[in-house]
Length: 354
Ligand SMILES: Nc1ncnc2c1ncn2[C@@H]1O[C@H](COP(=O)(O)OP(=O)(O)OP(=O)(O)O)[C@@H](O)[C@H]1O
Image 1 (cartoon, protein in one colour):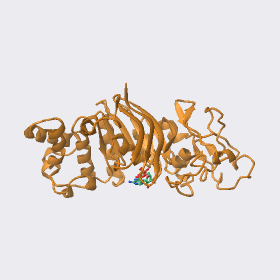
Image 2: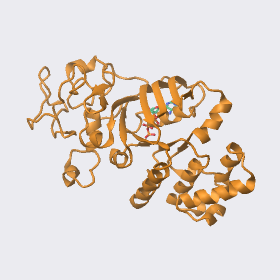
Image 3: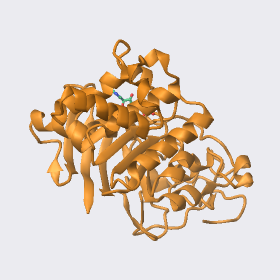
Image 4: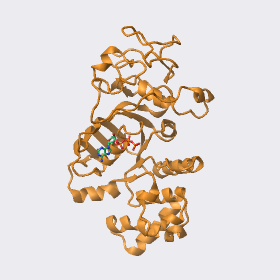
C-alpha cells in the first residue's frame, strides 16, 4: 500500500529560488527512502514541503498524498493533526529544536496532550515509555535539554517524533552533528523505530553511504530535481547518473578498501537556484557532458533494474547510451574536467565504459 506519493512537487522561494523542480516520489507503507545530495540541492525544502512547513510567500505546487490525502490542499486544522499523527519530522541539531526552558518529558508529553487527547498523567506515562523505547531511562524525563548529551537529545527528538504514533517519519540529517559512534547508535535506533512498526521513513543526508546502510531505496537530488532513484545498494555501488556516481565516490564504502582511494569531491558548486543554467543543470560540472547537455533538459525516466535516471547517457533510458568515464558507478580519474575533445566523445583514459 502506498503511504506517500509526491507528484510534480515544485517549490520557489520569494526572490525566485527554484529549490524543488518537479519531484516525483513514491513510498510504500513501512519502507525507507533515502534522499541524498550536496548542500543546497533542495533536500530540506522537499522535507519541509511534505509537512507544509515552508515560510509564508513560498510558491508550492504539485501533490503530496499522504495515505491518499493531499497535504498541500488540506485545511490548516487538518495539517496540524497530520504533522504529528500522520507524519513527523526529526531535524538535525536537536539543541535548536528542543525548548531549553522545558523539561524533555514535558516536551514529549505536549503533542500527546494536544493530538491524542490524553490526560496529563497518561501523557507523562507515555513520555516515560517513549524515553525507554529510544534507549533512555524514564527518569530522564525531568532533565532539561542542556543536561543531556547531543546523542541523548537526538534520542529525545526521536521520542517526540514517535509520540503520536505517526505513519511516516521524516529525518533531516538526523546524525550530522553527532560523533561517529553516536551516529551509528542513532541510525540503528531510527531503523528499529520504523522497522516492525509499519512506519515509513524518509531520511535525508548528504552522505550516501549512511543512507545506503539504512534505506531500501535512494533518491539523489541535484538542483531541485531527483536525478537518480532506485534500490539503495545499486544506486550506491553502481550509480547511473554521473552526479550520483560522483556523490557516491565521495564517501568510502564499508568493506571496500579500494573505495577509500576513489576520486573525492567534484569541482565547482551546485548552481544558484534563482539562476539555473540551460539544459541539464549538472552539465557545467559533469565530467562526461556532451554538447546536447547544454541545451537538453532530460526528465527522470525508467532505466533497467527498477531504477530511474535523468541523464541522456544512461543505458536503458530512451535514447540513452552508456556513461563513458564511469566504472562501477565511480567516475574514472581524469575523465572530464575539460580534458576531452570539443566535438568528440568524452575522454575516458581507462578505456572502460559502465
Ligand atoms: N527561506 C529561503 N529563502 C530563499 N531561498 C532559500 C530559503 N531556504 C532555502 N533556500 C535556498 O533553496 C536552495 C535549497 O536549499 P535546501 O536547504 O533545501 O537545500 P539542502 O539540500 O537541504 O541543503 P542543506 O543540506 O545545506 O540543508 C538553496 O539554494 C537555498 O539557498
